[in-house]
Length: 84
Image (cartoon, rainbow, N blue to C red):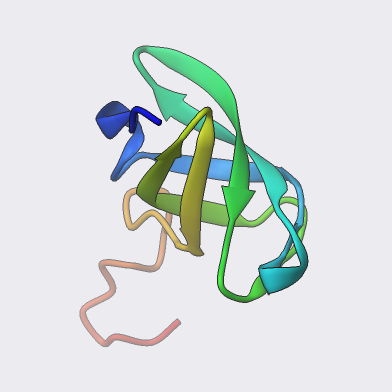
């Protein structure tokens, strides 16, 4: 299978939660100027609506993801006191 290197490092949102080792969910990934759907695998179950980052491509429109908060979208990320 050919890996899709363009999606590695791209953010996305789960539209169907993952089940960890029990099975994939589905993620909409912001890539190539739009959004594309992929099967999403993760080590631990992640809920629908979770923000994720693609860390690996399995090819055949399948990716490995981790939960992730985009610091640009996080209004408290730059607080000098470090408090949330």
